[in-house]
Amino acid sequence: MNPEEQKKAAAVAALDYIEDGMKVGLGTGSTANHFIDALGARVKAGLNVVCVPTSIASEERARALGIPLATLEEEPELDVTVDGADEILPEGLVLIKGGGGALTREKIVASSSRKMVVIADASKHMTAETFGKFPLPVEILPFGARATVLKIRAAIEALGMSGELKIRQKDGADFVTDNGGLIVDCHLGHIVTPEKLADALIAIPGVVEQGLFVGIASVALVAGEDGVQTLTA
Ligand code: 5RP
View (cartoon, rainbow, N blue to C red):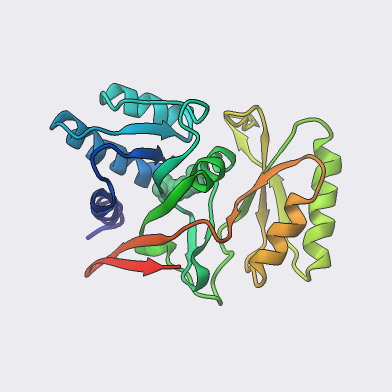
């Protein structure tokens, strides 16, 4: 299987976690899109679910497929959320998320679900030695952005890490999230103590959310050359 086929295989495997009548959180990104498409086919065939999307892009995709949608205001307690990840650390199922800039809504929706099922291709499966290669996304308010970035840098350095911090750009301008926020991509190379880093970042005024998901995911379905492997927290 090539990486795209692996993403699709993991997404299809996640259908096993969906039952009739469930309230389902829909993630964001290319792997989550495969899940939305697969779920859309099941809905067309008669499956009854109500879904809460984690981004405008996922909302539009699901709506086009005829998937019944609700907001988290309408359905504040969900059965399961299915979402992709940028990196998965098997010990504790710690994730890096936010490559698509949707980390804040993704974390709110996943943490409002009884279960979070992560779907991914094998390239996302890390070890303690490799975790943190993907630049860690941190969503911040535009107000005082430079001051917030200085505080993020200080928090990272206080934990013995370092690296370039870049405000994400798109089409020659700052990338703006669905929440009107900015994304700071923290190129750390290696994250040794994700729990401590998560705690330090979220304590900074101006930080809306950070992309480390600690203690949220319950299952990860990781597709590789030989099929789909199930990791549990
Ligand atoms: C979006 C995310 C995505 O789940 C993550 O970036 C993985 O994306 P993809 O499935 O396209 O590799 O966190 O904010």
